[in-house]
Length: 296
Image (tube, rainbow, N blue to C red; front, side, top):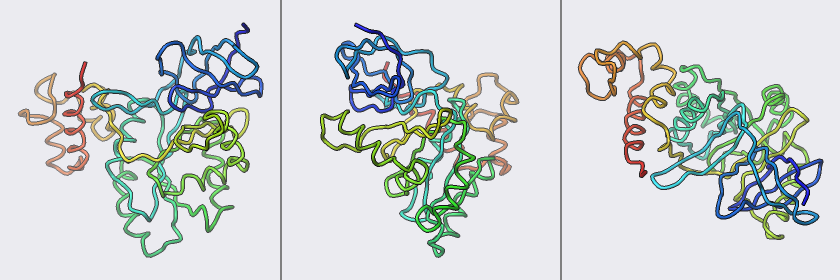
């Protein structure tokens, strides 16, 4: 059996599509393992003209994933930036945005927000107001209208995506598919081909897929989801994943301060002084609580 190296361009359950030398191979893992992510580089043994068994995951630069009390859901590997797509309508979730930003910070990848459907002018001021919090923390917010102004949107996004491995996330209805089709003109054809190979001809949109823009740039599109569990982050990782906490860490009376209700806590003093937004500190408390519920 020939051993090949490939790029995982789609993942669905325990089935993976690896691309090697411009050819696709439907791959599985040995046993019940499902620890492969879209964006992974792997070594696999070819078992038939278009099938293989994954033998090894090559070292990753980054791994972005969600987790709840019981299990983890891998989103993407070897990505350099996260783009969170929101829209003027339907309403978007601040909790999902905040958790996604924490996940990006904890993983060491940059994050941007894309506000789509800016042509719906009546809804625009309210959306802008809600996104001010994130802009104030240093995250860039890009405004666009994929359907009404496709060329302007494409011209704005191309420099952002060039030379990057980007993962797109967002709730359903935010216009993620429109953005992907703008950036990758043959995305629909590629996705249809991936669907057929991945799911024995049945069309499915519940998989994460990687689309290449050029030799050095790719976009990973994930299915829309409503929740972003971060049960896997430790207390130390969490406190460092909030950029506005950074200048206050190490200034508490107790070196092992949890920043919840301890006396002389520098973080709590900053919240009281309005230097840290109360909703952000509440999120930190919630994430800390969730992490303590993790079943080992």
